[in-house]
Length: 434
Figure 1 (cartoon, rainbow, N blue to C red):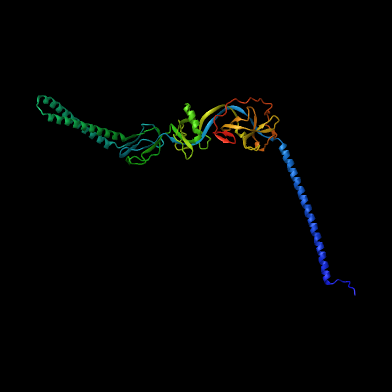
Figure 2 (cartoon, rainbow, N blue to C red):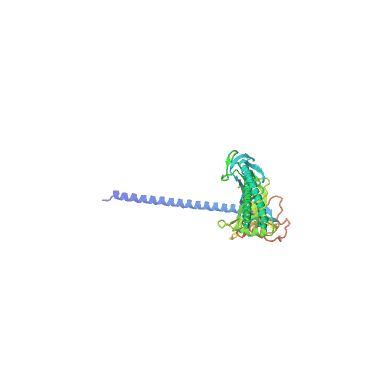
């Protein structure tokens, strides 16, 4: 008997095979779709990279607008900046030398006084009485001395006639010497009393500015008062003490030993306003090993009174002036490794309006100007602004009205001597700034 219908087991097996075939087909279709999507994404990435490369090439080939300046010759200042403190030459706490009642104050707070001006008065009556008493004692003892000398003269005449003994004469001579000593002591007492009486009239020992009053009239003052009566500070002239690096000592002493007067400028704390101009007075006698600095003292007339004691100021010591230096703006200087070697370089403008990376060696820096020791010649054109977008052989657009290097007269390299000294070294260059 034949069977046209499959049994249930065979039917399940056939259904399973059919589902497997369907699933394999679906997986193959998904794999094909993923491969197509991956290829499309890769192609889009390559197109974007090509477009960016083309854009970068176009930007690289496009000219960059820059600011430029010419290399010139001139004088540069070798200056040493430092932070200093205004220090008066004299600060005097006026104290009484004797005890007594303060009768009168002869100054106003903040007043400018001169040496010898009246400041205060202490009650002089007790000291005047002591002086008068000592003078009376002196007169009495002088009279006794005069009488003793007369008796000595009589005894010296009588002893020639044997009218007195030698012992009496010796006693009289000793009495005269005794009175002479007493008179000398009395004179010292009179002088001491006169000094104490003079101390009741207090005057200014220096010329300067009076501070705040420490005591009022009517108070009892003594020499042991810690605050005294008033503090006087000398303002004209006045000095500034500032530490400078020990490396600068040799150059400063070399200039000072030639008899040169080294100028010192004092600026405010913001380093924007010139307060006074003075000169170097002296250097300290030793270097502070903890900071590696040595203190200098500069003196200022301070006629306008802009320098105030204990004020912080920025000082600039003008050590020397270098003449006929090759100069360019400091803004033209770049530091990096354009050719794989760390160096200091500039972008030199060529006659075809392109730039070339030119390594340079720098000298002394004075504000926004710096000396060029090698690498450039007078008349060269260097980029001062826009250099961060440049590279070697990049095209540039010069400011309107500025002649190209080929059209401008170019002077021969300066024969000026190289900068004698340097302050800061960075990649083969040196600079000192104010």
